Amino acid sequence: MPSTVALSVARYRPEMESEPTFQTYEVPFRKDWVVLDALNHVKDSLDGSLSYRWSCRMGVCGSCGMKVNGTPKLTCATFLSDYMPGPIRVEPLDYFPVVRDLVVDLTDFVRKLKQVKPWIIRKEEKPPSEGEYLQTPEQLDAYKQFSMCINCMLCYSACPIYGLEPGFIGPAAIALAQRYNMDSRDQGAAERLNILSEHDGIWQCTFVGECTKVCPKHVDPAGAIQQYKLTSATHWVKSLLLPWGTR
Image (cartoon, rainbow, N blue to C red):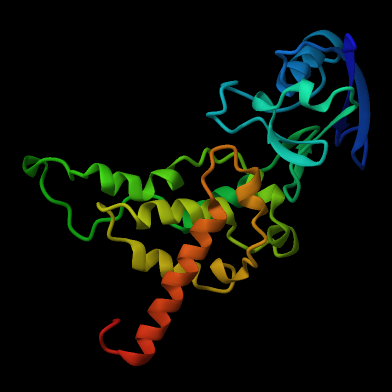
C-alpha cells in the first residue's frame, strides 16, 4: 500500500470566492486512520484554515457527517483503507447551505424537528408522589430503533425528495416523531399525525430508501415513514366510515 493518499477537499471561503473549489492534500496513509483523522492532519499540519465539524470521534454526536466520494458518511467511521489507492474526495452534505468549507447550516432541520414535537406529550401529568411512568422491555423495544437517531443529517443529504422539495419535513424528523408515537408514555400521536399528514409531510416521500441505506445507526427512517403512512391512511378510512368515532 502507498504511504500517502490524496485527499481532495471542497473549499468555500465566502470572503475569497463565490463558488466552492477543491484543494488536494497529500496525507499519510495508515490502516487505522479514518477520513476524520486525515482532515485533522490537514488542519493540524498542512492548512489551519480548513473548516469542518467534529466532536466525539465515536459515531455518537453526528457532527462529522460529510460526503466521501459522493456518499454521505460519518467521517469518524469511514476508513481511508476502504478508498485506496485514492484519491478520496470530501465534500459538505448536499441540500444544506454551505457556511464555510465542509460546514453546513442545519437551521432548516432544527426548525422542522421542533414542528414534529419530539418530546413526550401528556394530557395529564400524574403527581411525582405516584412514581415513574414504567415500561416493560417489550414497550421499550417498540421504539428503541427510532430512538438511535443522532441527527447526523446523512439521511437528508441522501434524500432526493428533500433536494427537490425543500419544504419536505424529512426522514430524521419523521423517524423521531415515530419514536415518540410508539412510546407507551406518550399521548401526542394525534397532534403529530395532523402535522405530518400535511403537504410537506409523509406523503412527499416516494420510498426511494436511500435514507435508510446511509443511516449509520440503522434507524430505518424509510420504514418509519411507511409505518406513518399506514397509520395516516387507516385514520382517513376510519374518518369516512366512522366520522364521529374519530373525533
